[in-house]
Image 1: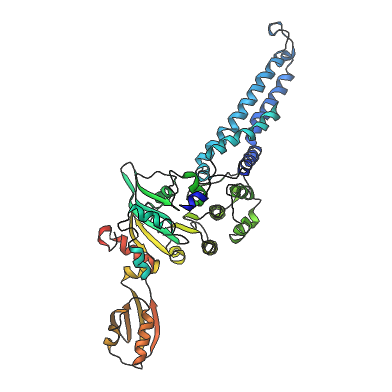
Image 2: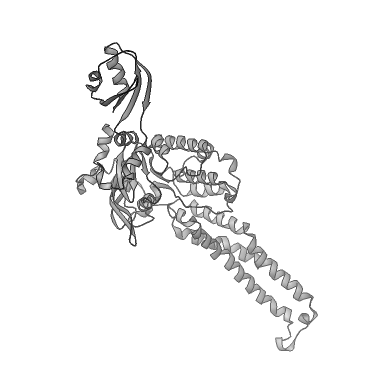
Length: 129
Length: 331
């Protein structure tokens, strides 16, 4: 009776910050995303830049070279790869390894873990640009 | 013995009003819990209650339904029928509040491989409004030097200990520990037991799931023996052991002759027989004391006294080995 009144279902707000920080740390420690997301596009950029034909401007591309046109494609590729490695990967492994299950027994709402993916994933998007 | 009687009928004819009255004293109340997975009945009509500040053991072989019971109790699974109250709260309806007052160690749970121990502790600590002193917890369980290590670099035993720490980190009113010492070496196991006792001394109610008899005997105030989803017996570890074996045994060498009737007249004694020069007395309660005092009145001294008390393990084999749950004294 008195207990249920005393216990207010409120998680300390600092908890969200801690989750975000740990998610950011995990993202930073996940090297595969950096290799695929930054290393490969960079290598492609250098290789294509070295090919003379790619550097010639073409009338059919409105005076741009193939290399110029390729850059936005690579940017899109990088964003896509980043999103695919940093969002579903950790969440799937969270579910697989029982990490979400354990979290669901704490006062923290499961949605916080999902929400924490955004702020912690955002910097990696910003860095790429 | 008295505690056994107290434990025997926890819910006979419980009316709703009665349930409210006991709510302040009972940390956990489970009544007629039933959970099935398809055609498999994992938990069948289980009822028990755990008093505040008690260490309660749920003991049984693998696959007996212990974990299912616990998972229903903490709201991870929805029972098919029956009621569960934790500090008077329903784990389904009052999910958020229940998670604030119950700390859990799950049998199969994990933490992100590339987080450091300190980072995990720090995060879990932030989930609770009045968290425990982490330094003390990890010191007792020998994890202090591991604070900077990645979770994936921890050994099985260290992971297990971290998991126990995290169950206690919120200083919740109830801690539910599912197989907490599985995979621990004997020393770590004893350290963990000490820690649990210390935590209980602060008033935390502890529900311990185990298939480790020694652990139950050492820690638990009361245990429920579970087999195939049923509560086979409920009582103190010593009480259950004594009941199953027909009592304790005292073996001694008398210094002189005495009449058997002297001992059989004692209320503690149920049987007496001679084994060569030795005398073996079976009975209950403070058997050895009673025998020695009685012998003293006729000037006989009991030499070489040996006490055999049966263990919880004996009780368990006797109670479940029959595979006839209805035949025991206990429902």
